[in-house]
Image (cartoon, rainbow, N blue to C red):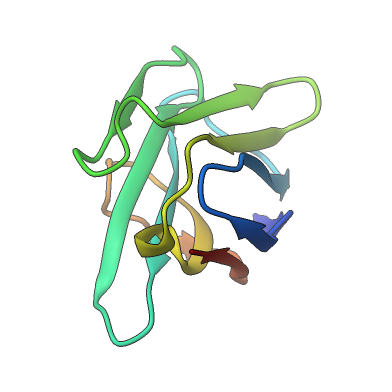
Length: 117
């Protein structure tokens, strides 16, 4: 299984942006697909997760209500819609997969999101 994230860029405070993660290979319905970010000088931080089969979602407190994670089973793609972006959302965003939320064993390359004030 390979994950490829894309869609990052430079935006302004309050803007919206959608990240995508294309998944190649077999995905099991019990798997969790998520987004994790790492800001400059910060530790890696869990952002959001979706169960591939059931579609149930889970968010960190820092993004809940602003970010929306979803998946398209037909396209084998996971999306992260980010609204009302803040400068503190600036980070490299990684797409990841695993059998448990935030215990990911497969990682894609990151995509950089920069939010200017």
